[in-house]
Image: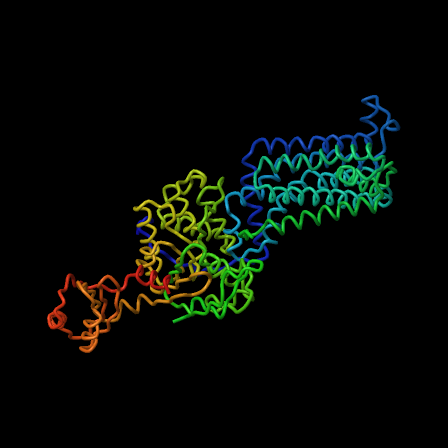
Length: 286
Length: 304
């Protein structure tokens, strides 16, 4: 029978495992995202700094090559907590830019087009929806942050030997934990703002605003009041305080470590609350 | 016959306002129409059945599953076509329907196969690789229908499926609904303002008004009963005529403006009506066969 003459047929085949279905959203989103050449180029550009770091680590252990290049190994900075702290700041900044690029297109179009009722009328929960959308950012940001960071650590461990690895094993934990915190905060903020404003462009502007306006207002509050309370709304400063502690760097931060963790916790909580409010199949107009 | 929807004193509130009040009914038809004026609570009832709104009192079951305790099972068995624009603009129809199939639990390969099948079925076969954002209103309605049936649900909930459709598209949509009904593989719950759509497709009708059930009618049963319905129009008061016709076995109801509706007994000779009218010296202006239309039922329910 020709396909256009088909009558309705039911489905009686197998069904997939419910708890894995949130990956479906991620899969389709990746397919759409990677159609953008700009995003692919940006991702490639994000690898330049880790690549430079890898070359640096290799060079610092290759005495014959250093001699050939007339460089002294003693004059090169050590590969320690400070080195990886700088790595986190650079790649963390790029992760932020990637979030501004990708984040707004995650939830806003679904809300603007009324797609939420289609997702949630299926055996698919709001938590799975958020998890699916968040996985997109978590994996993308991981690709340019802690994964290359861990590769750098392994390259260093391979070059420096067991003694260095044993003494500096804490660095691996700091890289993973420090960057995961940043990734989670960025992802939650991007999703919450994307869900709140429903408009992609406005959501992108708002994500930028939260960080840059936060830093600006924070500095203004500090100057006007002569206190350090402005640092509470400067998320870049907050996360740097946490990184400094994780990488055992001394910093003249405006915030204590407890305050920094509290601000991050409150930010995540606020984002989850916003998501719980906005990710609904239908809004009840009171 | 399996009960499709069973409501037992179901009440739903938004804040302090009660939207649905003490709804109790058992619906088991192949196609069920949900009627009511704006704000009657039709969409709220549908969304409550899907588990979107919390139940304040009472209970509801869909295909034997409690909507509160087995929400996921209910959603697995149900296909929902929303009233408003609901799509993902930058996806092609085939990707969209496939994704919706996968979210309903179909494996990726089966979902792709089914997406092609249902898009051909609803008449979007040639346009299935176009982005949904470029579709006309009628095509979007068809795409919404395709996503609702891709996973082979046992109950299809259609909220105003003919909204915004031109006459030919409306006819095509109704033909599809009829075809789905006749396939015998799923029940259809149709919510619409358009009485003709409901009358053409539905076997059972539930009429809501201000959050309460005001009428339930089994149209299929009424159609299948071998009864003759007649409406006559007289020039004068017909109370005595109705009385006389009742005496010879007719069931009469007055319809106003000199109109009298009646159900005739079996083997009834129509000439008897003329004879009774002549005896009472009442001229008959019109006599025609006519059963209550859904519009009559609806208007009577609204006036009640």
